[in-house]
Image 1: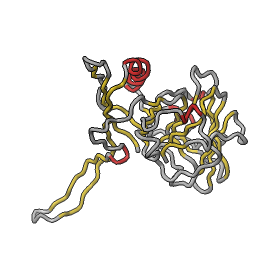
Image 2 (image 1 turned 120 degrees about the horizontal axis):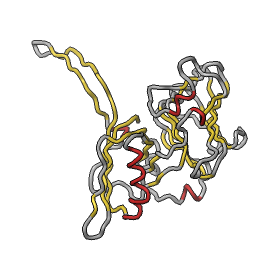
Image 3 (image 1 turned 180 degrees about the horizontal axis):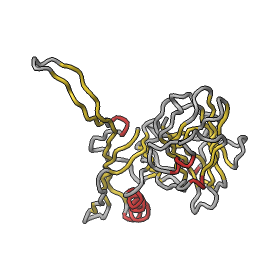
Length: 274
């Protein structure tokens, strides 16, 4: 689905530099006490699973046969204002499930201008005006297919100071397909078919000229968190809002400081779900 913006962006959103990547790693949904759902879950698929970064553990609503289900995020007491919700491992596109986000538990106060119907099951980054909300609610409008979610993040997005380098090629995460394949071939050289053993996504984002202040105040904190936890990633949200991912680093990201101007170069190698 990609990046969902409110119908009338607030200054805190529209003032972000155009063309820079967004990283969603700040997350207060780290325990089951932070999340609950309107309908009881299917046995074995509790709502507390969405607080776990693993995507093989999912929540599945199962009591309602159709209508509006709601997932409540208890975001009170957050140390920072909240301006995004990240969702990965969902079935909103394939299940034709509409999505809305409201504040304060009231369905009358939408933060994104009403229900949106995702076009696929790719990770979603929902942006809205930053504030110290007490509760955020995901409203899910479904008919025949019950909603499923593997991961939910909520927190403050991190826009980077620079876009990716323009002098090197870049493979966006959704298109960086990596497959392990077993090909079958007969003794006569005929093609007998192939088995796809695994498929994933991979990308490398290269940056140049981060200022020392920005790197030390912002990027280093992200890299510390990324040693253990995945993150939501949008490499060019202003131009390609559909190309998002739920990612994790596959190599150590070490800053390269130029000895003359002290600006910093950095490479992020990642794999993920796209």
